[in-house]
Image 1: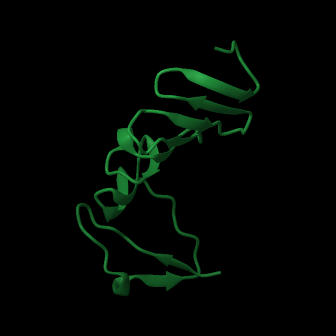
Image 2 (image 1 turned 120 degrees about the vertical axis):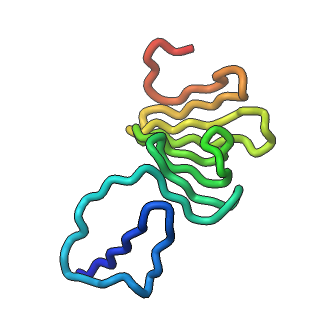
Length: 110
């Protein structure tokens, strides 16, 4: 299997033509953030997780936190969302103010 290693310099952009294909497994790296696209047509990631559809984590309609929980937010801005737990044991529906439905295992309920 071949891997393409692309190194992104601090604060810059990589030129894919300068990348080299190797037969070695890429070394694990450390990054502070990544971004593809611009504005609200973006895919981003940082220490909070990954998200799409907004340049800001707090308003992104789709995000996955670092624990693996999925959040699908309402596009009409009312704050409503659906959360699917990383272990798929719970699905929570919230209208922006109140947890309305919880499917799956309940620890204390609501």
